[in-house]
Image 1 (cartoon, rainbow, N blue to C red):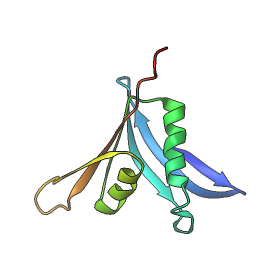
Image 2: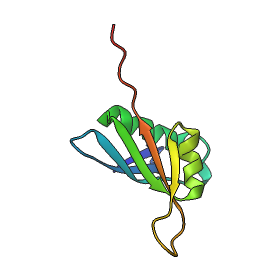
Image 3: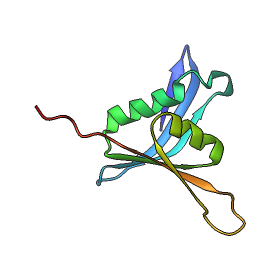
Length: 101
């Protein structure tokens, strides 16, 4: 888990796991309500990408948060996890291969 702190206050956090096949699963992403829509969530994801350099990033979330992931370049697909459960969204980002000279 990584926390973004500014002037001694926690602004946002990201929790994720990675595996040996190059996949990162975002388990938690939160930004204080008063600091939303300022780029902190995107920044936390970018920092995690730079730090871990995964080939693919996956997050499973609800409809409201799916729009956030869609807006920052993730592919979003809805699925029904089971009867009497709300629709969930699988958000996937595939890293680009570095260009060869």
